[in-house]
Amino acid sequence: MNVKDNILVLDYGSQYTQLIARRVRELKVHSEILPWDAPVETILSRHPKGIILSGGPASATAPGAPTIDGRLLDGSVPVLGICYGMQLLAHVLGGKVRKGASAEYGASVVRVTAAGNPLLRGLPATFQAWMSHWDEVAAVPTGFSVHAESESGAPAAFSGRDGKVLALQFHPEVVHTEGGLDVLRNFLFDVCRCEESWNLSGWVDQMTSEIAAKVGGDRVVCGLSGGVDSTVAAVLTSRAVGDRLECIFVNNGLLRKDEARSVLDLYREKLKLKVHYVDASQTFLSRLEGVVEPERKRKIIGETFVRVFEAKAAEIGGAQWLLQGTLYPDVIESGFKGKGASVIKTHHNVGGLPDDIAFGLLEPLRDLFKDEVRAIGALMDVPGAILGRHPFPGPGLAVRCLGEVSPGRLDVLREADAIFAEEIVAAGLYDRMWQAFCVLLPVRTVGVMGDVRTYAEAVVLRAVHSQDGMTADWVRLSPELLDRVSRRICNEVEGVNRVVLDVTSKPPATIEWE
Ligand SMILES: Nc1ncnc2c1ncn2[C@@H]1O[C@H](COP(=O)(O)OP(=O)(O)OP(=O)(O)O)[C@@H](O)[C@H]1O
Ligand SMILES: O=c1[nH]c(=O)c2[nH+]cn([C@@H]3O[C@H](COP(=O)(O)O)[C@@H](O)[C@H]3O)c2[nH]1
Ligand SMILES: NC(=O)CC[C@H](N)C(=O)O
Ligand SMILES: [Mg+2]
Image 1 (tube, rainbow, N blue to C red):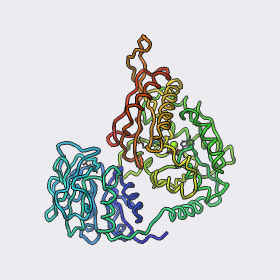
Image 2 (image 1 turned 45 degrees about the vertical axis):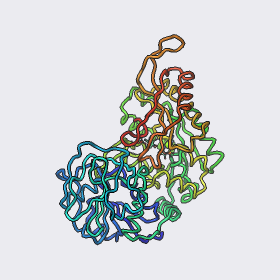
Image 3 (image 1 turned 120 degrees about the horizontal axis):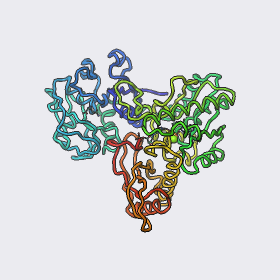
């Protein structure tokens, strides 16, 4: 692959670190992530044209907080600090950081207060930006200038050292920040003087050879779910290992209405992969009996998946590798990177894996985001019917059936979910959103149906726009559609007498409820 220029992202534990790297790739520049405490020599040996400091959960002024070596701040390589990165720059260069009067999470308005910041070139005088912080910069270092402020009046952008050290309190890497990509473009091409020299088809060729080299003559089993990620991973891997790849589709009893059959039909018709079907629903459901704690559900499901893969692999002649369609958001939310990231939720395929797993793991998409995976799938001619599907988590309906996961409650959820999905498709909205689904609450409320008092559970409608699952906003569905869905669910699904709408973005909520 032709990698000319390199942008280094130093990871301070942000949920968005990989997103920064991914945006840089989107702008056709190679980018690499190193932990914040990588030695300066290592950092400089990568010849970065620029360095980006990510956000992070720590407070820059706290004892032992992640820091930066002053040698990186002499202006010879441009440095951009984002959120924690900004607070850190302010702190180590002699400014002042303190806890703000209140936090800013989600959408916020940034006002440009002075010209001269190369990052803000071309942006309007006020714009909506995504924030996720509590600390703020109270004073910038001597010799630095503030160019924008947030609603609270705190600095939202400052720079100094001849425009070579720059800082932003908001997150230009998230899609909900207006002009965010322009900000990063300005950094890469104006400040760092990079040239476009990276693309996805180069990635496919390189990854195919890496998989071939790693697997050698071994055999691979793939957990295939019908979703985008595992399908793309399987198609990519089959290019590298041919018929030494066997796919296993597991019915875990937590699939949506008619999903097992429709997924199998789809694979048979559209793709030439060897797919084995395992119905393990009894095993999953009996292990989940009585479990209500979200993280326990996820861990039980993660382990059970692996045991099912092991048993099936043994039955079909053994395999040394387990291929999974793990993406970067699964990894970061599971807190897997160590280096200071919080555990948000244990994705079954990452943090939920048991320690004594009988396979080596093959996860070629581990550094990527869904929209990149869709683009790679399209490059490899994966059918649009698969690439366009909404994501569906491996733990499935278990994390949407809050409280106990019983067959009866799963059926209620399945029926409600199918109605919502059907109406979203009928309204022509399916391809215009990231996900739409129902959640069943373990909360009973009083209703009156046919003059009879009911005391039944409530269903939540959740529909979100997102580009990569890292941030999301709720979809403004029309009142007419909401009304139709609500009436149909109450009329057609026994056990539900109330439908409510989730109007929360991510952050502060997550997309799924558990
Ligand atoms: N029912 C299943 N059978 C076999 N493997 C599964 C199943 N569900 C999930 N997996 C495995 O877990 C991985 C992670 O699941 P995840 O839902 O993130 O990805 P996906 O299903 O491939 O794509 P999507 O996000 O579009 O649903 C999958 O890529 C796959 O390897
Ligand atoms: O394979 C998966 N295993 C999981 O354990 C899991 N949990 C959440 N998701 C999906 O990831 C995206 C982000 O979800 P959250 O905002 O709920 O964390 C959303 O698209 C979720 O549907 C999962 N996918
Ligand atoms: N997202 C971030 O980088 C947050 C930085 C810091 N922990 C704060 O709360 O302000
Ligand atoms: Mg899935």
